[in-house]
Amino acid sequence: MTFPKYDLRIELSIQQIVTFYYMELPKHFWTPGESHDFWELCYVDKGHYEIVRGTERLVVEQGDLLLYAPNEFHAGRAVNDTAPAIIIVSFHCDCPAMRSLEGKTFRLDEDEKQLLSRLVEEGCEAFDPPVDSPRMHRPFQRASAAFGSEQMIKNLLEILLVGLIRKGEIRRPPAVPESISAANYNHALVERIIDYMKDHIGENLNIHQLCAAFGVGRTRLMTLFKSVTDLGTMAYFNKLKIEHSKSLMRQNAFTMTELSERLGFASVHHFSRTFKKETLMTPTEYARTVNARALRRASDVYPE
Image (cartoon, rainbow, N blue to C red; front, side):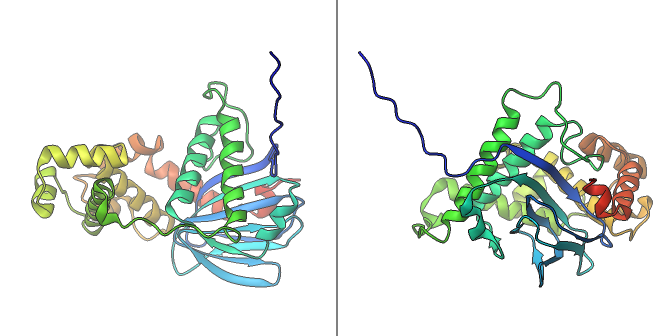
């Protein structure tokens, strides 16, 4: 028996990327203006970032995404005394519908942020050095990359862009209130605990203190945290400490001794050991590479 086959219609396709970075920037970072013949996506993951796009100047903040169109002049710099972290992906795409994204700034929802998070994870898996390394210049295939990692980058980026194009065309149904879902309730509880950790980032919190603060048992707390974050409770707290230390280092505001004390580490050695375990770099190595990036001009980031 012969079955008819249906050819899927492909509206948007990306075959080539030019650059892919997860960039943690110092507070004095800036790039002079440039333009190029491909699209560039810019997402602010932390802090504030001032951009010039064509004749427009605006400050974008955590959760904001915009695109620079081909041959559109653009520049950027850190502002408001923050050390921002941004995701940059530049790519070739001939889809005419991409033009509907020109000049717009998007506030991403949680699903879209998850897509970007997965995109960065695949970029770390696919390339050597990974996209979150200060040593990253151009994508170069990692010999031991997981099967299909580059295809996942293509697919995730296409899904994100299709969703952004659809935003102005389809009205989404209202979100389900968190209170009627046990899963959402648990997620909200973990988010409250994370906020509490951030407010006490310089302390030596332990499981017992967290249980007492939120009225939950040890086993339930650890199970919830693992299910939502995929990390142990205290492992997540240490991760927050290291992320905060990286932000402070990019501001050049403290010595390593002051940083370790400010974040509640018993010693500089303990801080350095924990930092290297989390980032595979010592604090000094990280500070050196970030400061070097701050001095690199756009012509170095996008060599001809």
